[in-house]
Image 1 (cartoon, rainbow, N blue to C red):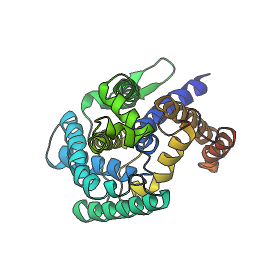
Image 2 (image 1 turned 180 degrees about the vertical axis):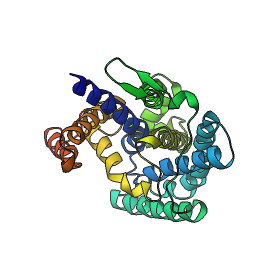
Image 3 (image 1 turned 120 degrees about the horizontal axis):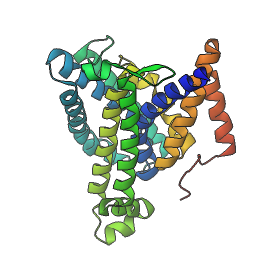
Image 4 (image 1 turned 90 degrees about the vertical axis):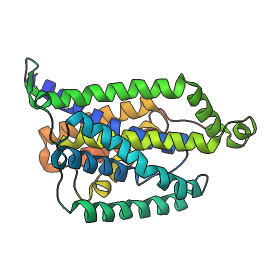
Amino acid sequence: MQTILSIAVDALAYGMVLFVISIGLSVTMGLMRVVNLSHGAFAMIGGYIASYAARDMGLGYAAAVILAVAGTILIAIPVERLLYRRIYGAPELAQVLMTIGITFCIIGIANYVFGPTLKTIPTPEALRQSVTLGFRTISAHRLFAIGSGFAVAVGLWWFIERTAFGVRLRAAVDNAAMAAALGVKTQIVYAVSFAVAVGLAAFGGVVGAELLPIEPYYALRYMVTFLVVVSVGGAGSIVGALGACLLLGGIDTTGRYLMPEFGEFFFYLAVIAIVCLFPRGLIGRTN
């Protein structure tokens, strides 16, 4: 029973980290209809900025997180304006080629500016402490990651489903031409949505740095993982993405606990099975 509970806690922490990073990709793919394979690159940018702010500038963890999110969004604004707007509504192949190119450019620039070394993000004493759960101890940082994941899920659901902006976004997704004819400024809606997605990627990159270390080829190493999560959960579905992250996180963690020599075999086996059973994802949009 102690092993089962330990697996459950580690799987929950890993799953919530995947969710915080991947949910922004779900927004761009499911709601904006953009196959954004450079999503992980923006998470890497957030991690690099936070590491520089905390280690080299001596700022606190909270300030580093805020600076990482804000800095990544500022970097992404001209990229969205000059590059991404050219592929809205374009064929998927054009989107893939464009975003893959952006990924390699970001990797090259990040390595030139920050160097090709693993980056750590110092955490405050409060997050380095161990918390006793009765059956085991766990770092406070992992509990913070779990709480952050649930907070992001609730906040993003409210933002999309219960605000006027969410109504405009869903209208632009369903029929952009009609929404524009009714006065919805679709370019602004897409720009804000892209900024939110990028900000979430940066936040996830910082919060999840303990489980997914920030290193030179972070954007490529985890690209497939983030894409798989969105595909399994259903692009554009917050609940589906959360369910996919918890399910795949649980399967991957269990496999690594019990049969570590198989690596990620069970993770991708589960992906194949789920995609065969649910071609649109666990909870995907049908339009």
